[in-house]
Length: 98
Image (cartoon, rainbow, N blue to C red; front, side, top):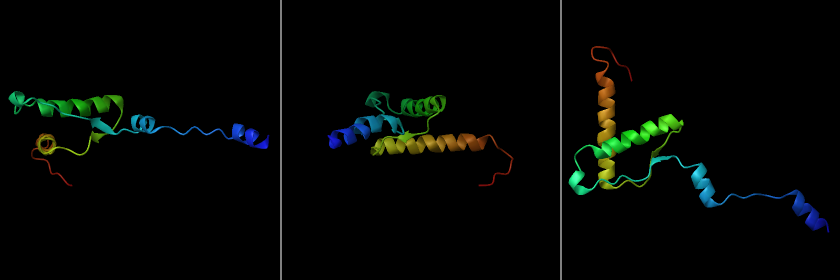
């Protein structure tokens, strides 16, 4: 019948939610877990640095999975402060314009 012919011509492939999330996932880090007796030793910052470096190698930009926990937010803020200050330290004596 005409209906069957039409449906054969217009076969639509609708991707499922999981496929979309896999292909368009912009999180470079899903979870940071540092056991309490290993906290304040730099492991969280190491994992954040590693995730960004891995993203650079893969050619992907990303951000951490949301929402961040209170400690996760504190760790990311500390990491970005450290990263920016170390970058600015390279330009001692040079004028910087933002």
